[in-house]
Image 1 (cartoon, helix red, strand yellow):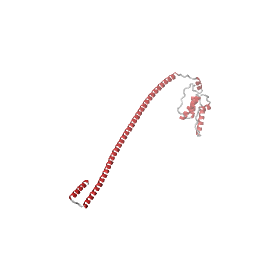
Image 2 (spheres, one colour):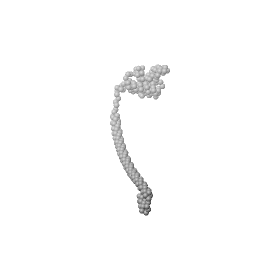
Image 3 (cartoon, helix red, strand yellow):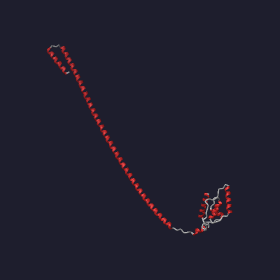
Image 4 (cartoon, one colour):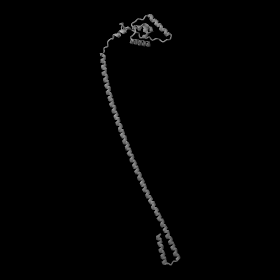
Length: 253
């Protein structure tokens, strides 16, 4: 725009020199020149404003790029720190696990060793106990072999009252008894006494009457025999033995 104004001025001067222009034309040219200058100033202001905006935009873009780089750098730093922390934690956990496993293995080995030692001690104690038991058994056997019990004359005299040592031959007894009378006869034989047939029949008839009346069968004991037949007093041990024999025979019958 400035160049054009200059050309117009030059043309104006040329025309002034070459031609005699009227004052009206001159004023018109001046007005046009003034308008062009004003327009040039406005355009200059607009250009200046556009340049300022361009600089602001450029600065904003620069700041945005810088902020982007800064954010990316910070993010990368944080990611690296988090990765490092995670690796450190994983390493610590792995080391703790390995240490715990080593302690467990060591404890298990100690337990196994203690168990083996206990088994060895137990086997040793058992062997010692077996040896002691064998030694005691041998001593007991020697002691038993050395013992020679003597015959007690008082016991013999006491047993003679029951006919146990009367010198008679052994009495053969049946395995089963057909009647209580037969049982009584055999008991008298053991005692070395005689039981009359009449007494046996009376006792048998009495027992059969009791059985037919529905009363339970009577279990004969030595005390009953003593009361009925005046057995000699004393000999409680033999009484008990005879009672046991009678009860067993009746149960088996």
